Image 1 (cartoon, helix red, strand yellow):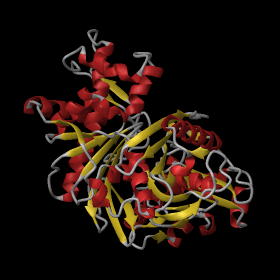
Image 2 (tube, one colour):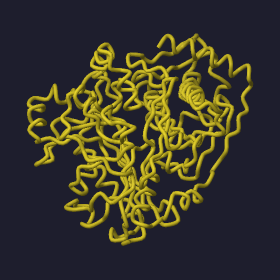
Image 3 (cartoon, helix red, strand yellow):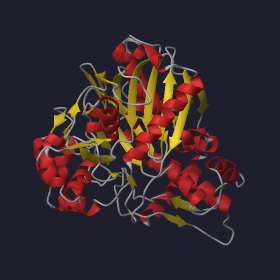
Length: 491
């Protein structure tokens, strides 16, 4: 094994982060570089992947500079990513045929309804563990093939490659066209049981199989860097995992029944269900957690599409605050929401509702309502979405949740974390390292090159920053949930 550091590239919805991790699982440098989101019309969200690639290069270069580390110290690279964001590019030139369609993009909602009306929902759910929703990659792929001039002919001629952002970044690093099961299982084209692309689903979606990447394990050497520019040739790229599964791994949720919630642009809850996929009867998704060697771990997942993005909307759309970090102080300036509810369905409602056409709603406004009440209702709206999801998840699992491990930027908000614990009635446990998505990919890369021998070796390095114990009044919690359900009906 060359080097003593792992580089983790965490490619997210609003920015790219580079982490440098040492053998003791210390993050010795972390740099985030933002890039633009493009909104060509309502409901459409796009990324310029060349802007993404530039942000990755800047983040990696700056992280190495901050650590005072020569690139020769990098033993391996792990990649994690915003999962369902999708694109096609020219196999020969690498030029994208269109901006990537972001996971938040809702333009394929009519296509999803048509597939449902044609009776395909049950088959897709059985094979993929997913519902027919614009969130996922398969209908995005079909939209691009149907709407970009010449795309379908080029794809059928073998000239185009498809990928989610992990595939794009790995291809730019190594020239290899590859993904892992955690990302493949988010596409509506991957059979959870066979762990392979499914021809029946590809035929329904009209996506040529030849455009799809090879599916490898989440921890193995896929290739080595070549002609990258900001890194020398020959560094193994050895870990790929979707960001939320990466957080489950980074939070050391290695045992069945352990769960985490990542509070980012959206909020994402994953619960480890062990070595067999578990079918949800409560609107949850079944997904691959990771594959290491011959072992595949599955998870139930629930997603709230808008979490931190609701705070960004208060900042950028309404001008309530100048920085996202100010929301906690503003919300704390009032004792409660004074009956205000904010359902942050700004990109539709995810699990367990799956209502892509839902819209955000604020209810309970009076002349006495202030910015502070709306700020507090925003935090409550995030926490109540998570409460809905975990209620459904524990129903599927058939046993109560013991604790929730929390991470992501909004997990720094003590008021939100305490409110979450109160609503759930279980401890919310915040680790010392909140960048768990990137950490997970880095750990997987390190396992592949022998920096660590097995997951249990790194699980002992997980450490707790703070444990938020439930303190809520039962009557108040019951009333809040009832008011929330009424507000959701109006969204």
